[in-house]
Amino acid sequence: MLTMVVRAFGIPELRKKLLFTLGVIVLFRFGQILPSPGVDTAAVRQCLGGARGGLVDMVQLFSGGAMLKLSVFALGVMPYITASIIMQLMAVLIPRLEALRKEGQNGQAKITQYTRYLTVALAVLNATTVVALARGGALFPGCSRQVLYDTSLFGVSVLVVVLVAGSCMVMWLGEKITEKGIGTGMSILILTQVVAVFPSYMSNLFVMSPFATVVILVSGLFLVAAVVFMEQAQRRVPVQYAKRMVGRRMYGGTNTYIPLKVNQAGIVPVIFTSSLLSIPTLVGGQVPWISQYLAGDHPLYMLGYSLLIVGFAYFYVSITFNPMEVADNMKRYGGFVPGIRPGRPTAEYLGFVLSRLTAPGALYLGVLALVPLVAFALLRDPSTQQNFPFGGTSVLIMVGVGLETVKQIEAQLQQRAYEGLLR
Image 1 (cartoon, one colour):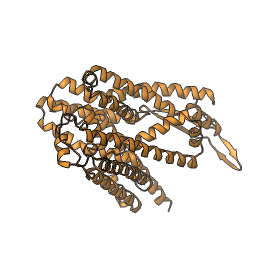
Image 2 (image 1 turned 90 degrees about the vertical axis):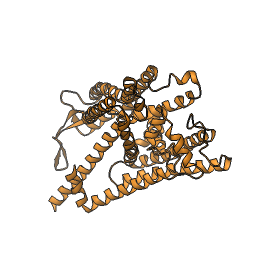
Image 3 (image 1 turned 135 degrees about the vertical axis):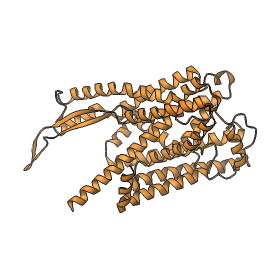
Image 4 (image 1 turned 180 degrees about the vertical axis):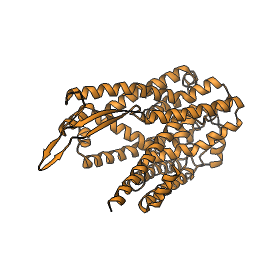
């Protein structure tokens, strides 16, 4: 790994991309610690010190600790991520979006523009909700201090505008990383958010009981190894291309494969389910008889959480991978799966293989998301209720995005090596 980084910095073009990405990350973190106008930072620190619970920890994780601090980049990448997921779902329901997706680069540009508009709308909704909770004192249950200096309509409106502008700036930074840096911009930024709070999570190991510390460290090592194994696992469907004459040249006659990952859905089902459950959890906190069922260690909450992840994983895979479209493209270029007739039989075979892979992949996501909740219930250690360092979601984000980024760096290094050899 270190050798690869040294080689990457030795190539001027790659060095420029890496430094640009690091610079954007620094700017992003600065915006996450920069307080918004009209926010009492001392009151926020005091209230945040006593805030614990499933919703608080989830919000802290997906915002890099910025949401509850009401910083300029408090909303983080969540509005854009949610808008992207919604646009993918809408492409199944709206024929116009499906036609745009098939138009190539021009159609994708229009879909990206629609995603930006939806991001702004979601940012307005999220910012208004967060500021309203902060104004009413419900953002930190159990804390009586007022976190806003000015609770008038003008002061609240300024704060909402700042948060929305910060969300638009984050969206722009993510797109710039994708365009001029290394890796996928939004994935890099969400990785930055998770890594930003991970050291504070790890510091809680020093205040836990020795038994809890040993159990968490050992389970964390096994969890990371399991996530790496599952993220790398794939089923390679063999594909052969028949030879064909185009003009005076012979094409085809090659063997390749279609890589179908076990976790084809990635982190999307966990993020979408967490966002979906945050609404009833927030409302339930105001109703005592409902809040007991929405606690993180309640069996009903665990069951509903895991079932939603599994169900959405199946749904997301079904809309992002179209076996019929893949089979038609293979048939168009003379490709076929050995032993399977081209066309509909190939599509049915790919659908069968994908459904068999999605079952363990969805179960893996559901179990992974339950790791911190089960740990809370089994250890019964009050200190573990603060921040669990090896949450399944955080490990999945760090490992998944890290592996994908390393693969892109390796691919560019290999491309530069081939170019040098040709010269």
